[in-house]
Image 1: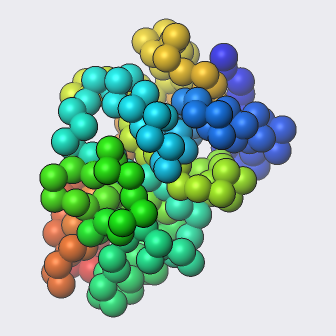
Image 2: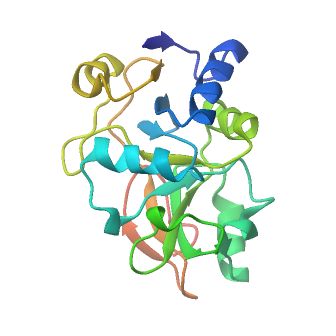
Length: 202
């Protein structure tokens, strides 16, 4: 099912519909401040398995997730002081931060390094979904692993239909993924240069 949503001022009933689906272990597609994301309750192991199956992605590669702010980040990751200062400077925004995971994170999300990717997007849709769900939501591109990103929700519906319970469509987005920063050590390392500018911290 595909429904249109305003990505700047998202309509509450549409957000609620998406949240109810995730609470039942379902999978959604949603717009972020970069590209479309494939989403589910990040603390639901069965939903995580569905995501890996849709992505055709090895479990060993792990997944990222979205939280609404830095308030409860210590629940999900080990955050050194330097990393916290960098995240405070750059959030909300188009960045994925790689940190050492806490014990709360389901093992299915974690790669062998036991790290987790965390996003706090500059996106009302993302932030409201996580607040309403009460849990982080999976943040991974809405495509088959290793293939080009889908930027058009109609294309996503065509390619992934049958595996997705709901697509929140906000028009065609730019093919511009997040910048990935490894903050597990004192010096940040850019793992992928994307939309986010890192000139302030390097």
